[in-house]
Amino acid sequence: MIDACSQESKPLLSIDDALDRIKIAIHPVSGTEKLVLKDALGRVLAEPVYSPINIPHDRNSAMDGYAFASRDVADGQAFTLSLAGTSWAGRPFEGTLQPGQCVRIFTGAVVPEHADSVIMQEQVQVLEQTINFPADTRALQNIREIGEDVKQGACIIAQPKKLTAVDLGLLASAGVGEVTVKRRLKIAYFSTGDELTALGGPLEPGKIYDSNRAMLGGLLADPGYSVVDLGVIPDNKQLLQHSFIEASLNHDVIITTGGASVGEADYVKEILQSCGEVNFWKIAIKPGKPLAFGKIGGCHFFGLPGNPVAVVVTFQQIVAPALRQLSGAPPAKPLRFTATCTTALKKAPGRKEYQRGILSKDEHGEFFVASAGRQGSNILSSMSQSGCYIVLPEQCNGVQPGDKVTVEPFSLLI
Ligand code: AMP
Ligand code: MG
Image (cartoon, rainbow, N blue to C red; front, side, top):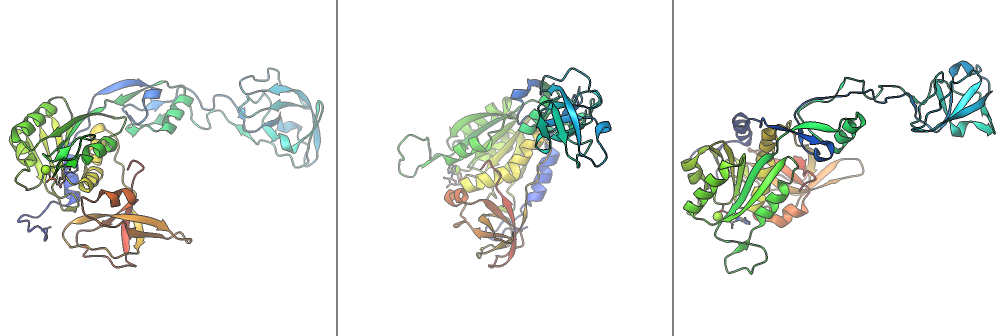
């Protein structure tokens, strides 16, 4: 695809081709470590886990009520049983149920031998030690069978999986206290640019505060990533080259922002070329065209654009899937669906665009999306106010109100 706006002489790489190239270039890390469960949230499981026990481990009651044997049910008639004792959660009834008896039972308590049914306490009449069961009593109800959730020896979680809070609960229910996970990715990131000013200091003429590092810190917040903020590097070739090489020695990934374009002070791609290799530079997306991907030694390198919105878009669409792949996690496809656009959207054919939108749903369940306002790649405020991307294909040349568009809601992290 030739980008008409910038008169590119060479066709730009489509985002799908860029993602394919990354897929080929990246191999998941092989190192693993053993962790106790409480430290394993968000980590990538490296070995399958088999349950050492049946879950439930005992036949137990799903209700607070009375356990009885179906042999005692009078066919379609009300009947009476005598109370033989109580089974509490954690303190089972120790006797054996005799014909004509029932046992008071609570949710989670072991169902006594010979009992095969539980009736809800609301459905019986209690007269001291005598329990009256109604005519419509149903046998064989309200019992959780041994292994009905998980069978002993069954695989409860297959690898690779990024462990969720629910997974930790499942593992704990099987008594599994430790898991083997992939090692954390070592990621270094920094900003480049003479204009960047650290927070807290006054803003000199022509300077700006460094928003990209603050954002990247948030975007990289993941239990599977060990992240180092290397600060700001000025637009100085020697300093940049030195920083790239230093960081490549002990990290799996370097992410930079700024200096990746074609300005006189944009050195990132040139330095990557001289001290490593460039896999691709520039892709047919907007915002985010000037993106350099390559390698320095064994370290993957993502040189993101400088404009903050372009940083978010390229991070989410390109870097995040690459980091997942490198960490050994399975791919996560973004949720996308169709909505009716309520505003006109400007777009020139050439690049795939990620415009910022505000999503809503009417009373019939139909989705609508409106532009979140100005779409410049420097306009972070409209990004902050929006809730989704409006994804416009390369050939699209604008959207009229009422047109159907593809939307991609933001993940909870941004
Ligand atoms: P560059 O790619 O270095 O030419 O940067 C493109 C635009 O992004 C310029 O307006 C920069 O000032 C801006 N920019 C670069 N880095 C940052 C940053 N860390 N925070 C905010 N804006 C930035
Ligand atoms: Mg710059």
